[in-house]
Amino acid sequence: MDETRGRLTKDGIRIYETADFAGMHKAGKLAAEILDAIAEHVVPGVTTGELDQRITDHVNDAGAKSATIGYKGYQHASCISVNHVVCHGIPGPKVVKDGDILNIDVTVIVDGWFGDTSRMYVAGKRSKKAERLINVTHDALMMGIEAVKPGNTFGDIGHAIQRFAESHRMSIVRDFCGHGLGRVFHAPPNVLHYGKPGTGAVLEEGMIFTIEPMVNLGRPETKVLADDWTAVTRDKSLSAQFEHSIGVTATGAEIFTLSPKGIFHPTWSQ
Ligand code: MF3
Ligand code: CO
Ligand code: CO
Image (cartoon, rainbow, N blue to C red; front, top):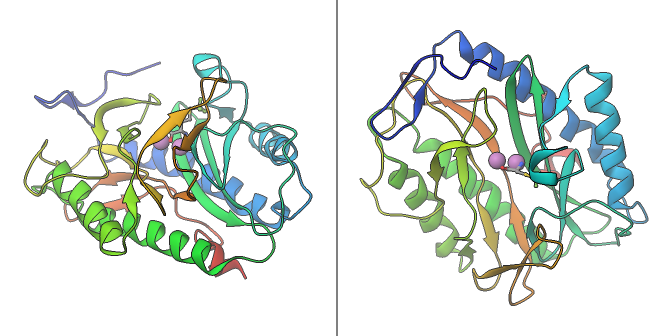
């Protein structure tokens, strides 16, 4: 794998060429198409394992590779995090119930480029509080993306996300963050979803990374279950997450993982 393109900043963040963005687009588009296609299957009674099997089939049918199968021993093409699961929920026999909220996170490799995205789904009828949480989490991600342009800092991104979520009396998870990606899955920097304006590395055109805030209705603390993957809220409060893979352009951000069907947000598909 060629991980040597472009150059590294003093913070160790790779600067990619404009032509590389086309590769990211292809990978991001497939990941987003997979999340589009799974939407109609997220219904009460389905198991998270069945959803993951559909995702695995979709990756294979597209002639792509899953980035998560084999990653640090992980064995699935998706993470499916239900209700108070914050992230890294392992698909399996768990049956989805009416009113459950699910984050489905997919990372694919296309021609060596990594596309990483996640979004929220609601099975059956959604509660008011689930809807509030999902709206705030989605909008927090978008506030973060709006802060992306050369000259701004990673602290500006984190601050925009944190300020928005906390203004709605929700909390930002500190234990997990976004990450650089490109020809690799996880690279510098750690993209924090909280922070102070003007702090952290300065954004430059050509950087590629994810923003993936996790927002809790209750307190921000998490714990990882005995399976060594599943992260849950300590207080059992509901948690939501949205993730896009983006690139920094001369004037702002290019989102590689936009939904081709325009259904990134669950209420847009109903
Ligand atoms: N897709 C996740 C992320 O956003 C990482 C999942 S790693 C896995 O970074 F092994 F849990 F799948
Ligand atoms: Co990610
Ligand atoms: Co992800």
